Length: 189
Image (cartoon, rainbow, N blue to C red):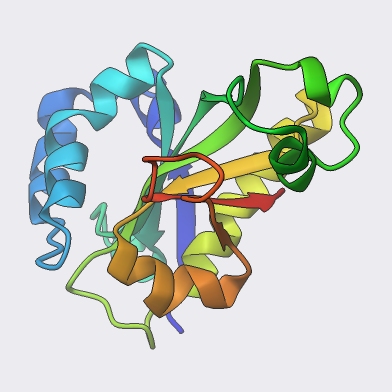
């Protein structure tokens, strides 16, 4: 596995990087399987970060960085969301929330959201595994969790990625609990 370092996009911007400075590095990130990842990084990541809708972390190739390049191996974006649980039965609320106080009367519940997570086509699983990316994402969420609490984590992903990767990592599919949201998966943080 290649050595990497992680930068918060917000910290890079506060440190003096402009959108124009970052654009070539963002444009160099490709993910043919999930073009949405490319488009998010190129067109929305800075806006999301500046507006506090979601915070993006960039996983950078350490050796390339030491040569003066921001070569993005992977990235992930974490935000917050609220899950509408008002129409769920008591049994479904219990299954989703466990022993949360006042659970049966809740209409919604807050959750962390992994809205984007992916690896550049320039790097293989030998360079950085999906598990390593996911673990870095979890580590960031746990930092926040220690300060503000929370226990529910949602991940938006395509169904083929759920069965291929995320299910094996312990995430549970929630379509039966959340009706039409068949792309959302959950785990306790």
